[in-house]
Image (tube, rainbow, N blue to C red; front, side):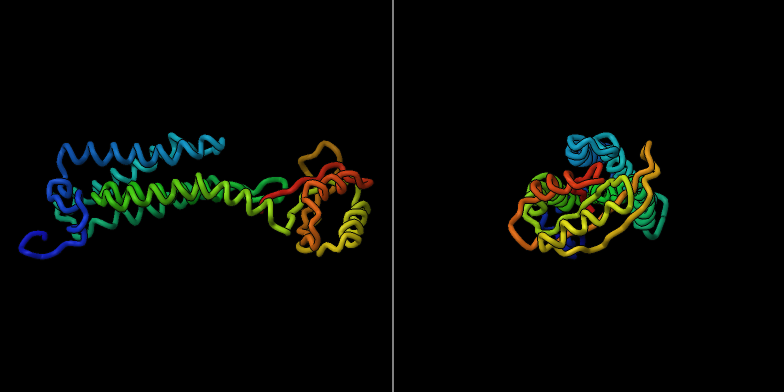
Length: 244
């Protein structure tokens, strides 16, 4: 039970039920910033392992900064008379959204990269706010779920894409007329063609034509075999499976 017999939402959680850990003091400030470093850095290490642009230090700093912002809001409310301590947290979420947008890039192969990194930055910001507000249980549980999603479910995603009958291709051709060879191969192997896009490859030293298309495989032919056969067609310089 909280003060004056009023039950608080955190009374059934151990740390949140202790009034000492709800208050701002030297110990709780150090504790919250330390937890933000550990949780944010833990998720950042997973991104660093995959050589992502925003990794260990970025995630750590974002989480610590979010915790500091939330504690500042609590300080302004408790000691400076600010009525709503959530204003700063709302601005932090918006600001991290812009930061995450900077990690999303559209590559020269018509692919989008950095969505998971951007989502991770936004989430680690929310985690920092949870730590900074003293919501320790939510921060720990959120860390476990997000870490599981980034680490364990990554293998599931790889397995799913490998078993999928949908093949998203990026190919470079010497001329647009050679596209008919790829389309003819798809038709003769009973594949359905979707989302065909053709554009000039401005990043290549030669004047090549780049193509992205989606194929639906109707039989049990392995994707590796399809890529190998497409690579051997006349006019096909390079072909690979891409991720949308």
